[in-house]
Length: 121
Image: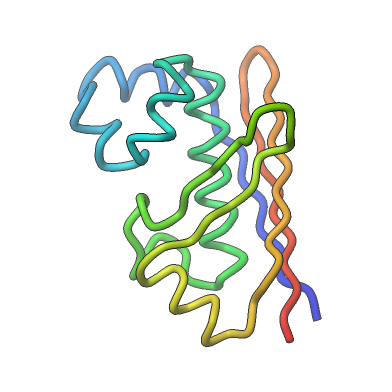
């Protein structure tokens, strides 16, 4: 059985939030590694935000019960981005038997979208 999640976010919404709350927002949503990779670039931050939302939907939690930092988007050099789960996100995925989350992120001039597919044992 498959689990899926998708999310889309306007780049302007992320830009305004970063401008208003800056480091407080970044630390609440993104891991230090994600912040280092994104270097403040709004399309990359928005893509990761959408990816985290998509993972939450795939796990069936929505925004409730998880911290944003428990879902990490990792992009090894020269490879597609992947998802690493930590803490409660990892516990929930294990309890549900979800493994092998596959992530696709894309962005246009105005929006970022992420799609996640996982296999459930």
